[in-house]
Length: 164
Picture 1: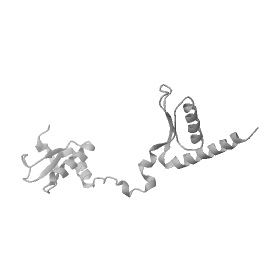
Picture 2: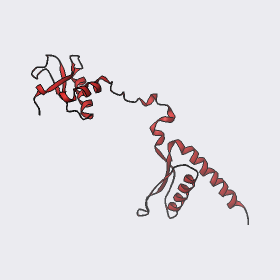
Picture 3: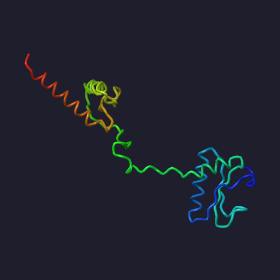
Picture 4: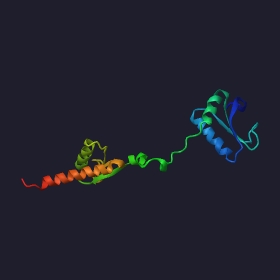
């Protein structure tokens, strides 16, 4: 590594959280591709009771700019509106069946949902016929998908119940 004299201090703290703050600053710089070194007061030329982050002089301006910008706050899901939460995109099962006709029924349901604009995925494998086939839709569209399937089942029940 280069001699510490070729490096310029871009962060220094003597706060009780100095080591943690300096480590965080070094990580932010590293993520930006800047070679930064973390030094405690056991290093030569570091003031007793402080922690420093140093970078090559050529990266000083960019490093200072990065450190001047507050780090992004972690997103608190409680502050995100319910409809915008990522778990609404989780897929939930709306159909599961096992047996000889399970695959064809699952494929039919998947086609029906997709033709109605509801994204659907088919889970299952012909290679393992003992495992069930499932149709899954995004959690945010599950009620709509279930209602559509109920409507189709009611319509089919009416057709099947009529005499020729």
